Length: 178
Image (cartoon, rainbow, N blue to C red):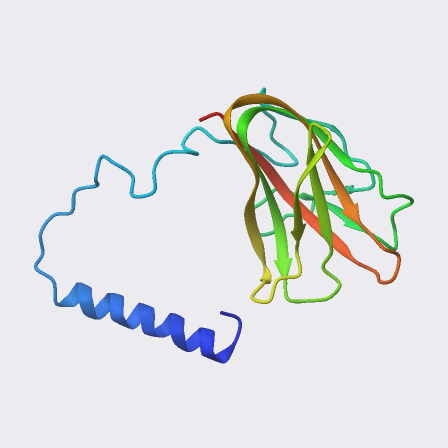
Protein backbone atom coordinates (compact mmCIF):
# COMPACT_ATOMS: atom_id res chain seq x y z
CA UNK A 1 0.00 0.00 0.00
CA UNK A 2 2.76 2.64 0.02
CA UNK A 3 1.73 3.70 -3.50
CA UNK A 4 -1.05 5.80 -5.02
CA UNK A 5 -2.92 2.65 -6.06
CA UNK A 6 -2.52 1.18 -2.58
CA UNK A 7 -3.79 4.36 -0.91
CA UNK A 8 -6.81 4.36 -3.22
CA UNK A 9 -7.50 0.69 -2.47
CA UNK A 10 -7.31 1.21 1.31
CA UNK A 11 -9.60 4.25 1.10
CA UNK A 12 -12.12 2.17 -0.89
CA UNK A 13 -12.00 -0.53 1.81
CA UNK A 14 -12.69 2.06 4.51
CA UNK A 15 -15.48 3.68 2.49
CA UNK A 16 -17.09 0.25 1.93
CA UNK A 17 -16.83 -0.59 5.64
CA UNK A 18 -18.61 2.62 6.69
CA UNK A 19 -21.24 2.26 3.97
CA UNK A 20 -21.94 -1.33 5.00
CA UNK A 21 -22.09 -0.41 8.69
CA UNK A 22 -24.51 2.47 8.03
CA UNK A 23 -26.86 0.19 6.07
CA UNK A 24 -26.88 -2.72 8.53
CA UNK A 25 -29.53 -3.38 11.14
CA UNK A 26 -28.24 -2.60 14.61
CA UNK A 27 -28.10 -6.07 16.16
CA UNK A 28 -25.67 -6.79 18.96
CA UNK A 29 -22.57 -8.64 17.76
CA UNK A 30 -21.49 -11.80 19.52
CA UNK A 31 -17.88 -12.91 19.28
CA UNK A 32 -17.78 -16.47 17.93
CA UNK A 33 -16.38 -19.15 20.22
CA UNK A 34 -14.37 -20.79 17.43
CA UNK A 35 -11.58 -18.97 15.66
CA UNK A 36 -11.87 -18.60 11.90
CA UNK A 37 -8.24 -19.64 11.37
CA UNK A 38 -7.74 -21.91 14.35
CA UNK A 39 -5.82 -21.42 17.55
CA UNK A 40 -2.36 -22.61 16.51
CA UNK A 41 -0.59 -19.64 18.07
CA UNK A 42 -2.88 -18.76 20.96
CA UNK A 43 -0.16 -19.60 23.49
CA UNK A 44 2.68 -17.86 21.69
CA UNK A 45 5.28 -16.11 23.83
CA UNK A 46 7.11 -13.04 22.51
CA UNK A 47 10.55 -11.83 23.56
CA UNK A 48 11.79 -8.30 22.87
CA UNK A 49 14.87 -6.36 23.93
CA UNK A 50 13.37 -5.77 27.39
CA UNK A 51 11.27 -8.90 27.92
CA UNK A 52 12.19 -12.53 28.52
CA UNK A 53 10.59 -15.94 28.61
CA UNK A 54 11.34 -19.39 29.98
CA UNK A 55 10.40 -20.85 26.58
CA UNK A 56 12.75 -18.62 24.55
CA UNK A 57 16.20 -17.45 25.65
CA UNK A 58 18.64 -15.24 23.76
CA UNK A 59 22.14 -16.61 24.46
CA UNK A 60 24.39 -14.58 22.09
CA UNK A 61 23.69 -11.50 19.96
CA UNK A 62 26.55 -12.34 17.56
CA UNK A 63 27.30 -9.53 15.07
CA UNK A 64 24.05 -7.72 15.93
CA UNK A 65 24.03 -4.67 18.20
CA UNK A 66 21.38 -3.72 20.74
CA UNK A 67 19.63 -0.39 20.30
CA UNK A 68 17.28 0.99 22.94
CA UNK A 69 15.66 3.53 20.64
CA UNK A 70 11.96 2.81 20.54
CA UNK A 71 10.01 2.43 17.36
CA UNK A 72 6.82 0.88 16.08
CA UNK A 73 5.74 0.07 19.62
CA UNK A 74 8.84 -2.00 20.43
CA UNK A 75 11.14 -1.08 23.35
CA UNK A 76 14.26 -1.38 21.24
CA UNK A 77 15.74 -3.75 18.70
CA UNK A 78 18.79 -5.64 17.48
CA UNK A 79 20.38 -4.50 14.23
CA UNK A 80 22.97 -5.99 11.93
CA UNK A 81 24.82 -3.44 9.79
CA UNK A 82 27.21 -5.05 7.32
CA UNK A 83 29.49 -2.00 7.18
CA UNK A 84 29.80 -1.70 10.98
CA UNK A 85 29.92 -5.38 11.94
CA UNK A 86 33.27 -7.01 12.61
CA UNK A 87 31.89 -10.40 11.57
CA UNK A 88 28.85 -12.33 10.41
CA UNK A 89 28.53 -14.19 13.71
CA UNK A 90 25.00 -15.49 14.20
CA UNK A 91 22.58 -14.48 16.89
CA UNK A 92 21.80 -17.55 19.01
CA UNK A 93 18.70 -18.55 20.94
CA UNK A 94 17.36 -21.59 22.74
CA UNK A 95 13.65 -22.33 22.61
CA UNK A 96 11.11 -24.99 23.31
CA UNK A 97 8.06 -24.99 21.11
CA UNK A 98 6.34 -26.11 17.95
CA UNK A 99 6.75 -22.87 15.98
CA UNK A 100 9.36 -20.09 15.88
CA UNK A 101 8.65 -16.57 14.63
CA UNK A 102 10.96 -13.69 13.75
CA UNK A 103 9.60 -10.13 14.05
CA UNK A 104 11.63 -7.78 11.86
CA UNK A 105 11.60 -4.50 9.95
CA UNK A 106 10.68 -4.43 6.26
CA UNK A 107 11.17 -1.74 3.67
CA UNK A 108 11.30 -1.41 -0.10
CA UNK A 109 14.99 -0.52 -0.20
CA UNK A 110 18.04 -2.39 -1.49
CA UNK A 111 19.95 -1.63 1.73
CA UNK A 112 17.59 -3.94 3.63
CA UNK A 113 19.36 -7.26 4.12
CA UNK A 114 18.55 -10.91 4.70
CA UNK A 115 19.13 -13.53 7.37
CA UNK A 116 19.23 -17.30 7.24
CA UNK A 117 17.44 -19.06 10.10
CA UNK A 118 18.89 -22.36 11.30
CA UNK A 119 17.22 -24.66 13.81
CA UNK A 120 19.17 -27.57 15.25
CA UNK A 121 21.81 -27.10 12.55
CA UNK A 122 19.39 -27.16 9.59
CA UNK A 123 18.57 -24.08 7.51
CA UNK A 124 14.79 -23.64 7.71
CA UNK A 125 14.21 -20.22 6.17
CA UNK A 126 15.82 -17.22 4.49
CA UNK A 127 14.08 -13.98 5.45
CA UNK A 128 14.59 -10.94 3.21
CA UNK A 129 13.67 -7.58 4.73
CA UNK A 130 13.71 -5.84 1.33
CA UNK A 131 10.08 -6.36 0.38
CA UNK A 132 8.32 -4.79 -2.57
CA UNK A 133 5.48 -3.48 -0.42
CA UNK A 134 7.55 -2.89 2.73
CA UNK A 135 7.09 0.53 4.32
CA UNK A 136 9.37 0.50 7.35
CA UNK A 137 6.97 -1.40 9.56
CA UNK A 138 7.26 -4.61 11.50
CA UNK A 139 6.52 -7.99 9.96
CA UNK A 140 6.23 -11.38 11.63
CA UNK A 141 7.37 -14.48 9.78
CA UNK A 142 6.89 -18.08 10.84
CA UNK A 143 10.44 -19.33 10.35
CA UNK A 144 9.64 -22.94 11.23
CA UNK A 145 6.70 -25.00 12.39
CA UNK A 146 6.70 -28.55 13.73
CA UNK A 147 4.03 -31.15 14.51
CA UNK A 148 5.19 -31.43 18.11
CA UNK A 149 6.96 -29.38 20.75
CA UNK A 150 10.74 -29.72 20.41
CA UNK A 151 13.88 -28.18 21.88
CA UNK A 152 15.38 -25.74 19.40
CA UNK A 153 18.89 -24.35 19.09
CA UNK A 154 18.34 -21.36 16.81
CA UNK A 155 20.89 -19.36 14.84
CA UNK A 156 20.04 -16.21 12.90
CA UNK A 157 22.88 -15.74 10.44
CA UNK A 158 23.27 -12.42 8.57
CA UNK A 159 23.60 -12.86 4.82
CA UNK A 160 26.52 -10.70 3.69
CA UNK A 161 28.21 -11.28 0.37
CA UNK A 162 30.38 -8.19 0.82
CA UNK A 163 29.09 -6.41 -2.30
CA UNK A 164 26.77 -3.87 -0.66
CA UNK A 165 26.04 -2.31 2.71
CA UNK A 166 22.91 -3.86 4.21
CA UNK A 167 21.07 -3.84 7.51
CA UNK A 168 18.64 -6.22 9.17
CA UNK A 169 16.56 -5.12 12.16
CA UNK A 170 14.97 -7.58 14.60
CA UNK A 171 12.23 -6.32 16.92
CA UNK A 172 11.57 -9.63 18.62
CA UNK A 173 11.00 -13.36 18.52
CA UNK A 174 8.13 -15.60 19.40
CA UNK A 175 7.62 -19.26 20.09
CA UNK A 176 4.38 -21.23 20.22
CA UNK A 177 3.81 -24.49 22.03
CA UNK A 178 0.66 -25.72 20.28
